[in-house]
Length: 422
Image (tube, rainbow, N blue to C red; front, side, top):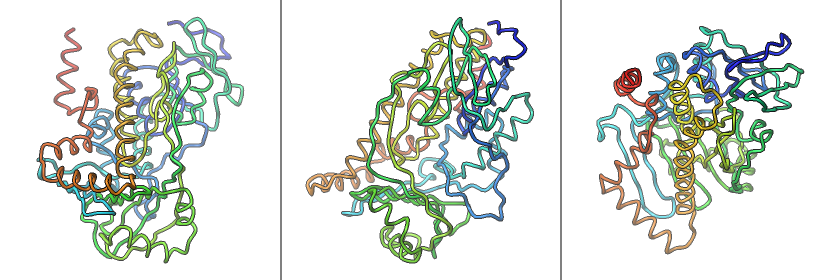
């Protein structure tokens, strides 16, 4: 693919729009493949890691084993692991209405842990640090105002009138993706009429590296362990009215309600820092690809946060896309090639969206009959090791078709050897 020779036009083999975890992961993987890369980010990115002395950031993510393996492939996992994170070794899920409960422990499945709770900024900082080794153009504080595709080239006009041409645009610019809208890709979805309240809290009891989740008719309450033994990050999904109330009441009253609603699993709770609200909705793009354009992460799909799958699905998108591009480096932007990525990821993501919706509807049911059925089901699964193993695999992110770049190093190396032979 030849790019235009006009010296007033910036030219790159791949342009990534969005500098979140998924976008930066794509950039680093493609830079390792030798492509010329540009990153366009509407905001000025924060590239430094959080100091050990500052309070925990409210924006945390649950990282699965598959995402861990992908970060290892990218060469950033050791940096991430050396910062503050919490490997959770236990999970407890219970029903607030009856006595249904499921409990998991990593040791029962010969695992060191079931995943990690990590501040987003820790991951983003590690990715930026790794990107410093590569010649990547970063255009921060700028937006893509126009996006035109013709003769196998995208022409992007930015908010500062910079013009860029590239055979492939990767849209990693979030749920309200401007690239998706500019290219006219439709998306379907719905609002949950709920908000997620996130905050950092401290208990009088240690979390013991346990991820807790209590299900109630108005939504789940998750307590995710942080690196400090007595602090957790909460994600409290509830109705819009209740969320607004919880976000504005006196911190002492909030802590008392939280202690009660969490069944005091961490003892008496105290609020640490601010509370933030995020309205919840889901969407799924009708297609992930067009000629010269591909959607990844939240630009392609969003999901209810009850299982913490969001960023992990986006990282699997990235791993799948990079794997395909690696094997066909000279076909950037080729629609038939990009369709392979769509086939690999779209149905899997749709299944996860449906599964989370099923969980939400089941645990949100207010019918006494449904509540009894749910309670019996929880206790039955807790006693059935085969079904528990299924849910553990879901938590680890190792269920379903996993790209080789998100597998153990041994499996990945074997695949790379086979690919090289072919």
